[in-house]
Image 1 (spheres, helix red, strand yellow):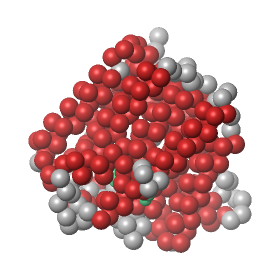
Image 2 (cartoon, protein in one colour):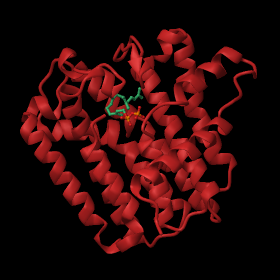
Image 3 (cartoon, protein in one colour):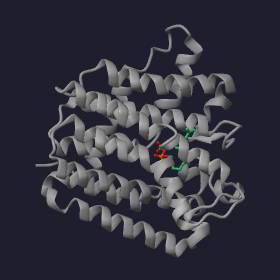
Image 4 (tube, rainbow, N blue to C red):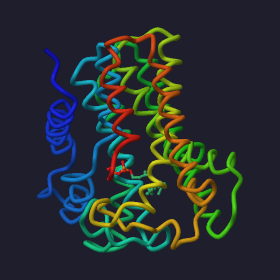
Length: 296
Ligand code: GRG
């Protein structure tokens, strides 16, 4: 019998914590302060939504566990780097992340910068040095996929638009463009990397790609709603930052009621893309539900 969703999540999260511990440099290895700070930024925190998506898609695609561990770790390392850099004084200037002081507060700005750099390069080192596919060209495609999702045509590009949009009003398509890149690209990459670790047809891959895109955007809409509805203790990061920073969000553009309705519509459409997968997409469906219904 299959485990219920909560048991599956807990088992995956604790297994994945060990994976992360093993791929990160030991804190005792030189340069100790940098390695300690890298572990501080990555370990013991976060919902691990992107790795869970990679695992769920990999299970659907019959992927090898060891390969999935590496794909999931590479995405989470990129995510952790983005949070460390996003919290720096030159960006969002925040002091709290995952319920603890941000990396530059706990260490210092230069260390936090190097933590982000090192986590990013470690992600690509993992993808390049471990066998992820029997087809070498496919593995190169996977490396490229994560690079594009992370770079100026993905997450970093979305962040650049975000920084430039402070104090401005954006149209809904402009806001959507920003978030599809800033938040959505990495979530979509998590789904695709999970699929590439296993075997799916092109038609299935297209559907999973669309699922990743829709659920990535839904994640951000919900994030905007939570930023104005939840409290700092629940979120583990400073609540109300978007309004304080005069940032355009789905809530500022649509109002809370319509923003919630938009998240529900994206959720529904995301579930529709999984219709043909039957029982094999159970975990993906459950994760989609979690992403939209979460309270933190
Ligand atoms: C610095 C290149 C660069 C990019 C930063 C991801 C990002 C881009 C900034 C983070 C700021 C932010 C709050 C974005 C909204 C959505 C988001 C990514 C939230 C944090 O992700 P969660 O909720 O965090 O998955 P945990 O801690 O659970 O992993």
